[in-house]
Length: 290
Image 1 (cartoon, one colour):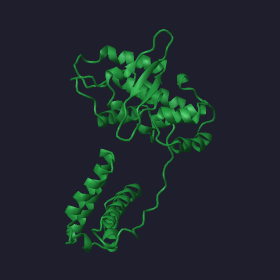
Image 2 (image 1 turned 30 degrees about the horizontal axis):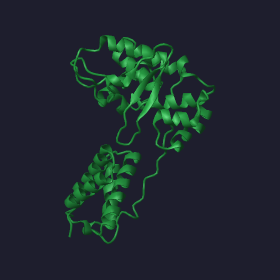
Image 3 (image 1 turned 180 degrees about the horizontal axis):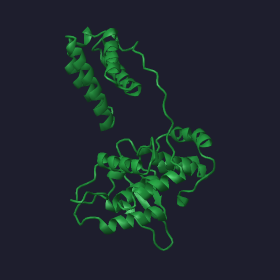
Image 4 (image 1 turned 120 degrees about the horizontal axis):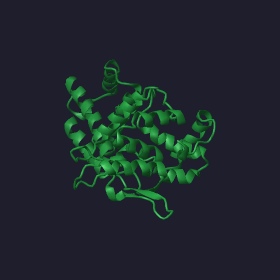
């Protein structure tokens, strides 16, 4: 017999050995911890004691607690993956999660900022040199917020003698290494920021006033604040990346090149934007015109 706590630990180790990203391992781990805590309330501590009704009761409890269908679907997926692992590992003979259904929900399409919205966002952050550079870089290069937070000073190369500047984006746990060109808008914003960047031995590009690396959550909070100040509703940080992809496709940039610049692992990810831009944008907009 294997206890739920022990099974939880084995599952986490299994994910790590599979090479899953630390964020994925953490998310799955927390979901299953939440499940095992619920099962403990039902006085069930062994994996063989769990049945489908127990899992359905857990999902029902999440609904009552106000979790969104999308969050519950993710936890359903974690639960299914957990018990599938237990069955493959011969820890259980029957899979109680096999009949567990995902809640129905509609995936909202990516939010694409209009030319007017981006100008309003940039104007709202005009007096914040650091955030202006961050916003400009996210939109003009399409990098992820996690990638931006990890950038080092040597990753930025400014253009000279007619050559365009470049941004080196190091490989992440699930993202490829790549080089993205810097246009004049992003170069100008970066140079302004570097003029006021605090003197420190820290090589991280974006830092706090005390010289410590700026965290993702702080960047996200600050940009959300400027979205509100600019009067831009229903927009998130990732929408700057969506805007980069959509506008490049509308401007006629090849699908393969956009996919490479955005660091998409699959071309199919980039292709999903094609139908979106046909219905959302009236005409091509070049990033340099923003």
